[in-house]
Image 1 (cartoon, rainbow, N blue to C red):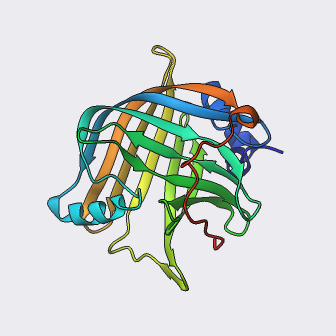
Image 2 (spheres, rainbow, N blue to C red):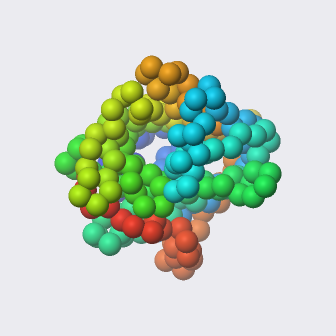
Length: 227
């Protein structure tokens, strides 16, 4: 068994990642490790004013970030577990210590053989599902691009149209000079331009998931079986 990230990328592409990124994205049930990153977002930004209502609505379910800021402390928790449907799942729960109170951006990832990619369920109730494609850059960094987005609520299962959807690009690298991971996230709409994003750096620590487990409140409230 390998991690869901290595499965999605393939052995050859995964081996081209920087060794520190290989370890970080080997988190999974096979390795028995979880990873917690702690650092600072140099900048959390928004696009034009018209996107703010959409970000505010998404923020109600820990989807997207309705606030901006600079030099914001944050944590990211990558914890593997088997979900209610027996699928290996890894949390991507980001908590930002913004003025006025912390805000979370929740995601859980699985590997989908049906879609031949990683599937990113967003929010506390997994209302949004996005296809993710991972690749190794020449400098050993990881590039993640989102594809189709789908919205699920009860019997509703619809593709999010490009007019209101956003394409995400995530770049993660390791800076050997500082010993820190660097992260840059940018979400854009094809018609309205940049929506939001953030950039910063963090250090990572690893622990045995069997002894620590999945802390209360980390898993989503509702799990979605549709891929």
